Length: 57
Image 1: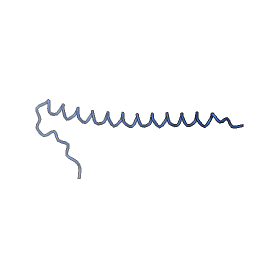
Image 2 (image 1 turned 120 degrees about the horizontal axis):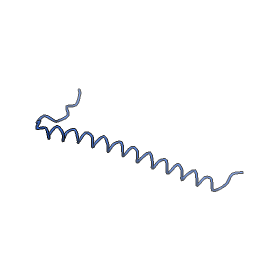
Image 3 (image 1 turned 180 degrees about the vertical axis):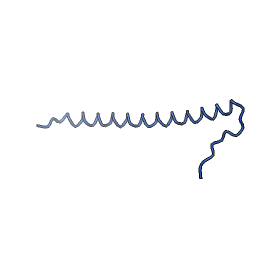
Image 4 (image 1 turned 60 degrees about the horizontal axis):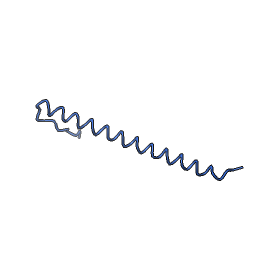
């Protein structure tokens, strides 16, 4: 009833899904970092001197 090759196929699919999730997470992190850097650069290019992000306390 069970095919011995099915375990390998399922394992490969899970590995592919895990790799896709990791790539998606890295892509989202990179996009967020690039957006923040771009905002700071835009601020500096406009001639402002107080472009630092102030964390909320």
